[in-house]
Length: 402
Image (cartoon, rainbow, N blue to C red; front, side, top):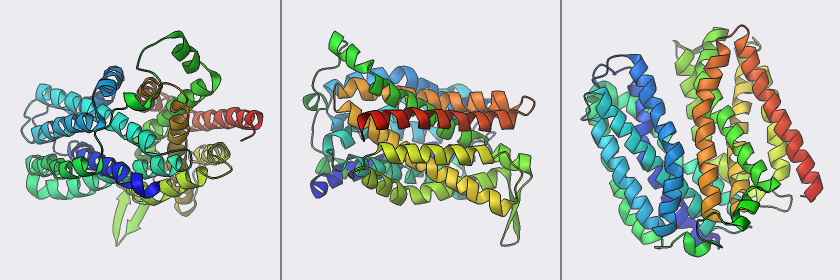
């Protein structure tokens, strides 16, 4: 069964990674070369790097509706076309409004890619290996972020934004032959119990406790890890005035934050897959989920303390490991829940909540951090949220017996 479905999951993961190259490159390149890009200020840079997340909120229901009528292959082909157009366009853009259009276009492409990835895992896996393939998917597609940032920052210094954008923009086209050879022209709707409409049974199922618990947990985990932690980590490093000497070069602030994020994306293909595989076993996913919720809470609570860097760095690494584990496990739990009812409706709503959490995280984090003792309030508050989730899932695990 694993060998039979291996290629579709891996193929969709790598297609997503190829498409992510251009987006991830911008987070390193645009704050430095914004004048070359035709922008007037760093405020415009901030808007452009966040607008794609907000575009996904209204787009996810439409994308879910499209996947009910289009095959996965056709949906992913549209995503590739939009991604290529947006990324190549980065090399041609010379005004804020042109950039804004391209970033909105990328937001649509990402909705197609993300939901397409979720649906591929759900269709290609069963209860014995769904965690493993969700971990494989999450781990592999993040390689696009790793190489996009590392190669993008390096190549932009010699090629400029235009050269890197053209290179990364056309790369996803190389994956199209593999998409046709490994992914059947299947429809999500043919694998779900009902079409995407809101009848009484669907509403009752969506508002059941275990479905709401999964969606709420996904939103909060995305807000805490994709949003607050990712966006504020460099600020925390500067707050503690940490410096890391590497080969005689002082690495501070954003550079150290970037190295830590790159470290996470390096281990994700292996760690996420193994965590997902463990959760497919007899104990199930929920005990592992609870354990990592409490590990994450303890790690989060220690971040504001001014430890020695040799103590503080392992705490951050443990927190990033928890982020990998919790993201994989909640996605797997969500995909389990989706198989019980209307897959398209559930995963569309779940994906929308994930995007909302990721978009709200930076706004909420920086709104709190700039208050008096804001760093402590933000990080200790995040730890308390994880403790609350841990208690909630502990009670549910004991009630259900797994």
